Image (cartoon, rainbow, N blue to C red):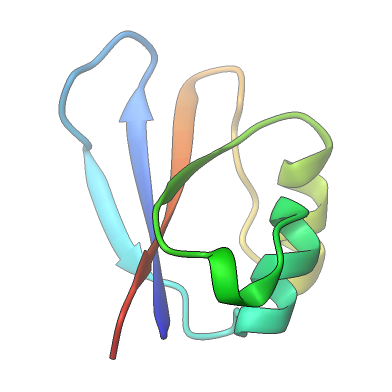
Length: 76
């Protein structure tokens, strides 16, 4: 499984960037989202405390004041 992060300007309908998140494992995503690894199959918004956990796990900071972020799981 691989993960993508999509960034939307607040109020926008289409993302202004999409990137692979190579540093995130299924176990990391499970911890971040609070979902068992086998049930991670969709697109999940990242909000609040998840932004700090995401930065800690990946080194990628999220600007929640200006953007909305979504983590997408894709099968290999």
